[in-house]
Length: 90
Image (tube, rainbow, N blue to C red; front, side):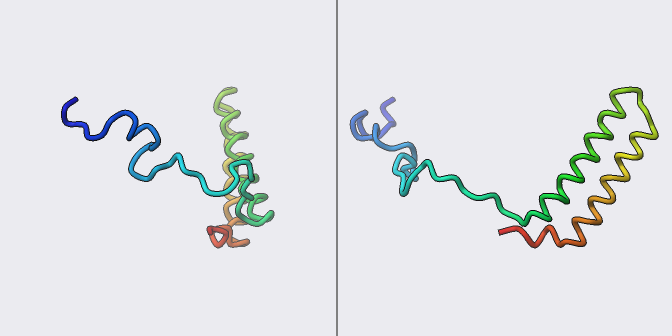
């Protein structure tokens, strides 16, 4: 305890070396989602394929449904590459 510098009154107002308790601007403003709508569609297609593949593994495994899900993921990935989804990074 002797190694600590400052008193409780001096350190009570800070939350670290960056003083994170000081906010600039309004905290209730919602930031927009990045990306174009077509990119969100591509990602949704890929996620649906993963969900179908996951359901197929839990229910059996039902291999034809698993491969259908894998095919949807591949189609979604090709679609994502075609619409240049990685260019949406800000």
